[in-house]
Image (tube, rainbow, N blue to C red; front, top):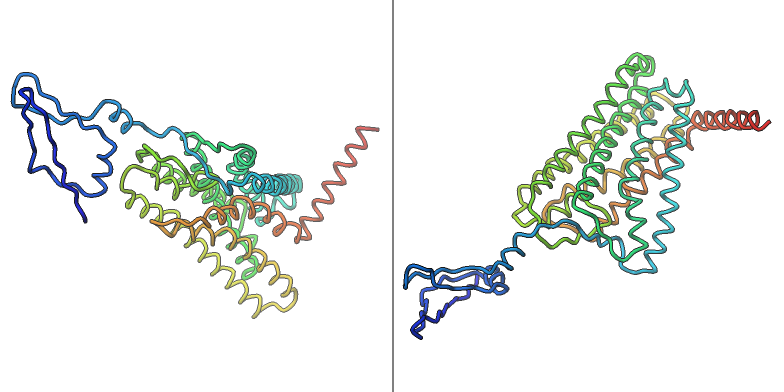
Length: 373
């Protein structure tokens, strides 16, 4: 590494000059840092030959400052494109809210669906998707309509916590739902015995607890890091990979921990899901001929949703020490697109769910007409 010599010349009281001919040599990074500092050499009281090297108080104050907010660069800096994205994502967000809320109300209002393990888990999935979209999308929509995209440090931590809490819970829940489909297809006679009410409750609780533990570790990784600038995040929300790169310290260990936590979690769940659906497809091909095309179509649609969630997560969290501009585009898939597609994939293609929705609509229409009459 190239070095730059530093020679200090200090004027003395008698008009002489003190020259430090054996001054230390500094690397380029250190010399650039010192280039912005004003070095003050003053005489120490009590001794004519004692000298000390000091740094002005203004510089100390600047170096000790902490970041209290982050600037989000968003998806685009073009005002026209931001207005277009605002309209598109507003439609997506309304679809997410209405679709998932309708699923929750339908499952809750139909006793037969509520007793089914598949629809019991589907109700939890819709609730997670509804909450997950509310973590990032409202802030993103508001930022599309203003120039300054700022989020406080505490707000950033809150986004990281709820994003990973709900995201990890959804990953665990999708894995449980794949296991539920595996038991239903491969062991149909023992299905209701194996997937009893108590086991379903325990599995759902385990998914929520797993998400809580995962998100707690992510926030712990971030909250202990020092931030003194810069404070620009190349994303439309706060996430661990972008935030830790702004820390004023070596983040090698933190990034390794992120990979071992978020990256491996996404990869393991994805592999388990692929393995489960592979067994399901093999079983359908060898045992069941009737309804095979419908089951294959259902599994293909489920795998599409699963891939839209897990592939971006594996790509982002299993790749430390580097980031690409495409990361924030991929992030939209598991924060906006997938919560919108889940109601379409898991319900509108399902005859039982459509029948329950029709019954619910007739029930509410009859109640409204009775009250109005």
